[in-house]
Length: 113
Image 1 (cartoon, rainbow, N blue to C red):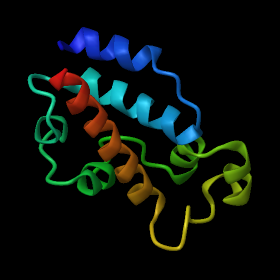
Image 2: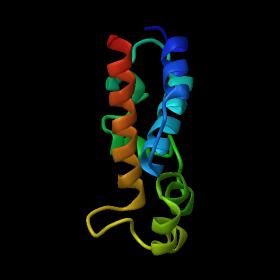
Image 3: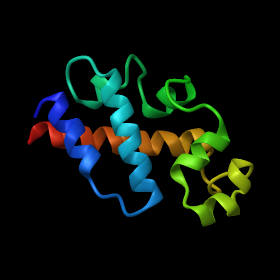
């Protein structure tokens, strides 16, 4: 598939959860910046890992913005709009990195079709 076809495929995908919606948004943002291939290495734009990509400011940088994107309304309330960590094991930037990784996997999977 080419870039336009992948964008169309992601745009029409039904997302049932806030996380799936966020993954699709991240995938579309990654595709906007993509020049060339659709592997994780190509999409990382010079970063070595998705954590480095996220912490380097290549995506959202404020906890509240990340929380608003990846959380359902009840999760957003529980985390006080991003004031509290998403869980006991990661920060909001790490949570974003995980979602970005899944977005990259979605892109590379669609590119192989």
